Amino acid sequence: MTMRERQRAVQLYRGQIPSPGRPTVAWRRDRVTFWAAIATGAKTEDAAVESGVSSPVAFRWFRHAGGVNPCLRATVSGRYLSFEEREEIAILHARKLGVREIARRLGRSPSTISRELRRNASTRTFRLEYRASVAQWHAERRARRPKVAKLLANERLRSWVQDRLSGAVQLPDGRTVGPRGPAWSGRNKPHRGDRQWVQAWSPEQISKRLPLHFPDDESMRISHEAIYQALYVQSRGALQRELVACLRTGRALRVPRARARRQAWAHVTPEVMISERPAEVEDRAVPGHWEGDLLIGLQRSAIGTLVERTTRFTMLIHLPREDGYGVIPRTKNGPALAGYGAITMKNALASTMTTLPEQLRRSLTWDRGKELSAHAAFTVETEIPVYFADPKSPWQRGTNENTNGLLRQYFPKGTDLSRWNADEIEAVAAALNARPRKTLGWKTPAEALDEHLRSLQQAGVASTD
Image (tube, rainbow, N blue to C red; front, top):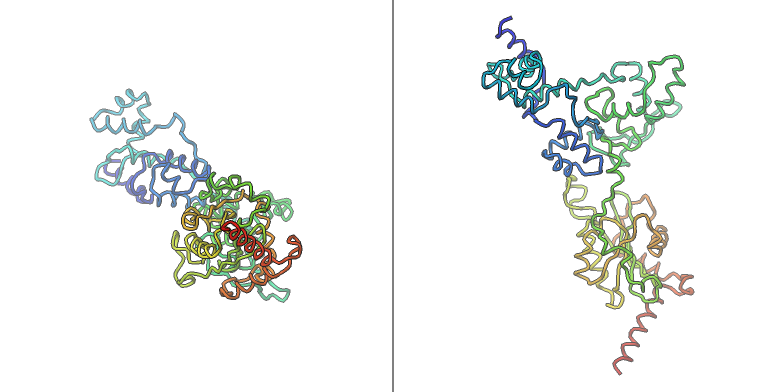
């Protein structure tokens, strides 16, 4: 075979390979660094910075892998040529040195160098040019050798698994019941109101049930992890990707364990922890210390609640949706239109609490919701210090939690709270404040607060005499 025939054969072979785009020199190192950062719970953007690649590339790696760590080894065996050796081969080959001389200088076999120059040369040009970056990409692409997925090779097993992952819920007469779910678009976690009713066995149920259905057929065996990877990893291609909507979580991508445990509490600093709150708040002797939270309803609706610790006086905050909600398509990092975004919540809370006398604006204790992430600006505007409770410690805001339970009589769970206007919400607060409370000696919160304000006025008059 002549040189041109060999080149033509390699070019035909090269034409069957999808273009890699710009060759990546440190293909393995970059991905190992990226997935190591993901395993620690880092966001994809932060992992991209740590691995030295752009954000679009990092998001593509995560999406194509379905969020599943491919568990690449950091280094390859010494029996294979490294990128540094390929750089040396490219330099010596450009100097017209022979194969045996290059092999002698690198301490490799001449056949290894000859095969490297022939198999991993660039075939986009007329002549077979050898470039280290392209050769490294060829070598690492060829070394992957992905195994054929078991579900892809066994059609009977694949059909059995798919039938139990999907399937509509039906009545005895065969009629399908339940809502019609939207067409799967690949987005993560569709809204729970749009989920279709399916028979949906979990992958673990499928895996454990196979030996009972097929006790004598060893080919009808698969682990639940293999089913998950067949759904999440695009390169497997064994199961229909739409079936991820039938999983319990409905996730289109797997969430790394460390990332799932990570909490978005960056707005809570040590200076605003509940441990830094004044000691006078605990004994409830001095009124003016408030606890706050949100009542959450359907379709991202909410009502703000404020409760004074001493008198149990309650104030409700109307949080109407912003203009454009439900009309403007939801965009990532776009404006918060649901009514309780950080800036909207800060403004509504400030306008409500500034109506109180200065003696009743001593402090505010909130849970760790992101709706009050603008607490620093709120404190500057109102001079009311804000403190945050410890994670998963509702008893630290017991007064507010109890009041929220009472308010659920008027605003039940599973309802759209945006249907109530400001006057109706204020009427509910007035009704709650006119209800006798055992903890107040059967006084109402309104009477307890009025009594406190009268004592403040008398003390002020006495001090001027």
